[in-house]
Length: 80
Image (cartoon, rainbow, N blue to C red):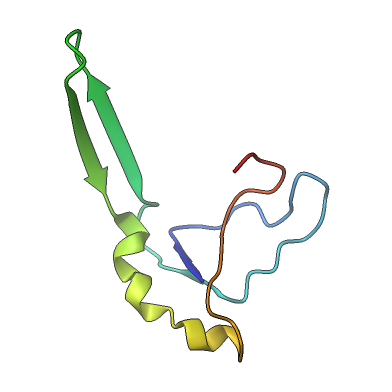
């Protein structure tokens, strides 16, 4: 289950089509993003914008079907 501002790429690095019926597109929103700034003393300031993630409540795990309790979304071919 995921929310997305836009879905521009529906194929993985191996050309396999990604299944997207459980991804809800929220038009007019940005994808969640974070900007982390570190100064020369290693102090950090983080600015976070939830974007489409603020609509995560519209996704229900039960929509994925019986027996599904957890979903992991990641890019294909990437490291965990």
